[in-house]
Amino acid sequence: MQRQEGVALWRQIALALQRDIGAGVLPPGGRLPTEVELSQQFGVNRHTVRRALEELSRGGLVRIEQGRGSFVAEDVIDYTVGPRTRFSEWIRRHNKEPSGQVLRLVELAADTTVAAGLNVRVGARVVLLERLGFADERPVSIASHYFPATRLRGILEALRETSTITEALTRVGVSDYLRQVTRVSARLPSPEEAELLHMPRNRPLLITENINVDHAGAVVEFGVGRYPTPRVQIVFEP
Image (cartoon, rainbow, N blue to C red; front, top):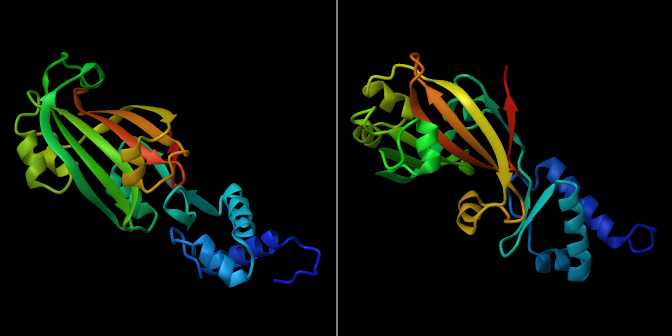
């Protein structure tokens, strides 16, 4: 650090880290050295390092997660909502590899929200598939997919035996389905959601509620998606 140049030390540190981020030395999603390590590297106190990191955070280059450290902000992925929105296609469109982890696959009774979304009575049997979605091993979504168990007989077994929702629906007689409605809102994540999505609790989630129908207009799926705003933005296609 040049202490006689008239540029604050914290700003010099911020510029040095910014250069490393721009050069790929610190890759998107990568963890920065700790405040102690940066203090030793630059020969300054932790308060000066903290000021530099806060400046980078305000500029959107770094995200600070309480208790986990500081990370280089990832590129924002556009989640394009169209008539045929499919997770794997969305991720591959951004030249990333999609994958998923099943959190829950159960049959249960529909509550008021799910019943309205599926156009069934409250208490009707529905199947819930909840998955954590990844893009290049970075979590980008938590999706809850609800299906009418009576209308789509065998859907629970089909979801157990197949790797995609599209294939499972095909097995129970739904050759194609279209997005009819998408509603978007936002809220802060729960502790569990923040942990699963590796995001700070003071950044909002984007919430989508989706209704998908077959070619006859019958509802085949009601979905609730949760997306971390540090990584995803929603774009609507006409």
